Image (cartoon, rainbow, N blue to C red; front, side, top):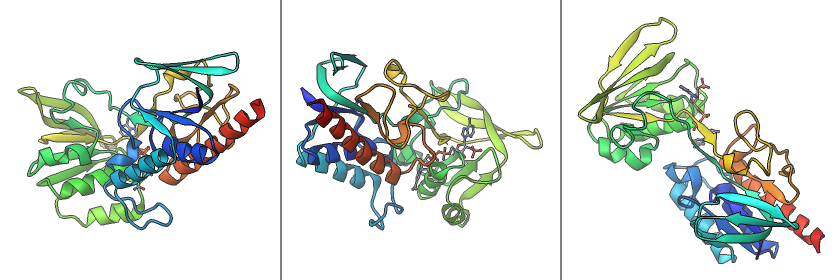
Length: 304
Ligand code: NAP
């Protein structure tokens, strides 16, 4: 039996593992994909206090190694179900069932799809949700990025280094992304901003994306852009459906919790992007991990 099972090995989950271990608690981190969470795809982090520049991969690897060195166990298993019986939690994965005194849900969020016809079928054939992972495949081509947040602007900037031309399509004319980054992108010669516009259809030729139809929401006019790649960066959606018996979810699916990170079930805490909060940043994910781990440790100490 572990003291704390942490679901998710992103920044929040691994920070929780570090704090739980340092509080003398045994911690098991379960991860269904790969450690690191969303930050692993960020080429350069420059807003984490005290670290001027670091790649997302190096940051996540540092967290992972730190958590393991402090004694946390990390298993690449997806938590499918959690039940509580006699004050103990059973966390079921396909391979094993783990027992714990407390649980921290740090499930993060997954990429939001546009919801267009053929979108799913064209993933890996012109549709991507990760410029740093797939950008190289589009070297010398014309591509589009959709979104107006930091991810979209960062993706577009990254792609300007490889692609002949990059369209940045955003549904408004004001960006959610940091102004400094938008300005930096505007200076690139091979970028064209397509504002007040949405992608309304995907064109396919021989099983690959060959173009997109874009509609200007102000004029109502549609036009075709002959792109070989579309990088969708329109935010994230939470993935907490498996745990809705234990926690309350808001209308968007985020786990409802205040700054104490307690959920409706005693002994279940939450941390990071998967919960209701105003600011979803690396710093707030790390901060949540610390708060949740210390709250879980206090809860466990009170049991004995
Ligand atoms: P985000 O900030 O939520 O931005 C999503 C963007 O997609 C928004 O511009 C939104 O438009 C647009 N959008 C949403 N749904 C859409 C739809 N159905 N069709 C078309 N456009 C749609 O997401 P993000 O850029 O992935 O960033 C997530 C969080 O991570 C943010 O807090 C961000 O600051 C942070 N982040 C930070 C860094 C960094 O600091 N280096 C890098 C990446 C991400 P509207 O603006 O009109 O709503």
